[in-house]
Length: 109
Length: 112
Image 1 (spheres, rainbow over the protein chains, first blue to last red):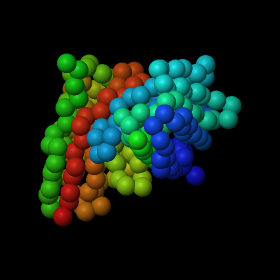
Image 2: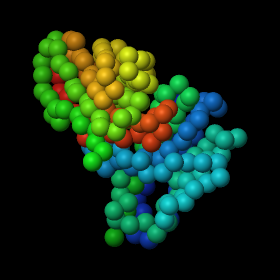
Image 3: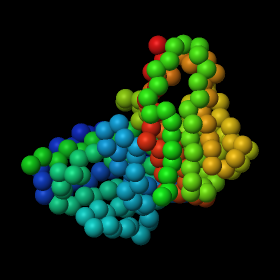
């Protein structure tokens, strides 16, 4: 079993749709959690940190459930520009970051 | 401007010819790391460094070396590259405990 598992996708949605990505992690000692966005063959860029209390940034909402070892990302009112691969990242206290394989989103007109 | 500079952007080489991919950051970050990205396998950590002269193996360190002699630089060295090291490589930096990673623009390496 992989340390970090994501919905494989791809997700193909129309503009304006709401889409949710899920991620689970196996190491209960993990300390920090993030969502990154990666456009084709380019460097990943931080989208959001993820906290147990949940956090929102415009159309994006991230949530962490430590008991279930589960992370989610919700995108509301999808835009064409949201098309990308979304990476779930889990970090331990020893500095090791583990990336999920990513979920590809395509938003269509 | 805060930057992570990775060079070269593209590299084609032959089996066994030593090469170095450079990574430099101007953000005074303690943490630096190298990843490789392959289709279907996602981003995998090769080596990371929590500070100067401190380096640790990631998930796939075999065939790679790193050094951290100064804070800003973290070169990735392939002493004897092989075709299975053909991949897209990313360097990343972060402040304490790699919160919020910043990535270089990547190096596409092809080993023939």
